[in-house]
Figure 1 (cartoon, helix red, strand yellow):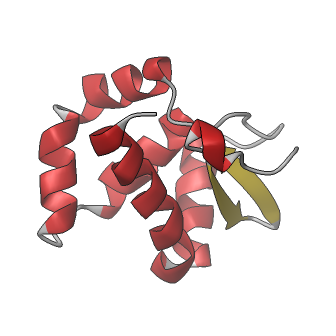
Figure 2 (tube, one colour):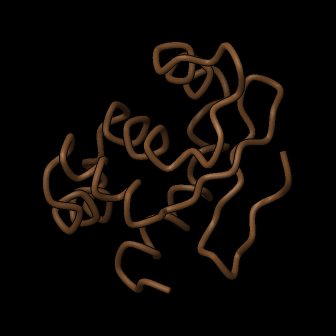
Length: 103
């Protein structure tokens, strides 16, 4: 898997021993919004420190550019928790910035 391309608004996330690329494409964000509700409300919750771990995992899951073989959503969530919030926060910031600003 290649690295994230900041020009595309992509972010890197290291979980389960792999560096994954998160790409906030239109289709990915629509899928996330369908499951999580309005993305602007998600950004507001994040700004207020009220973003739930499940919401972050869902946003990341939908924005995965490629899902590694054998990785399902539950395993991804567990790997995200194992990596810790400090590892996930930079990627979350990139995605939230893209949601607000676009490309």
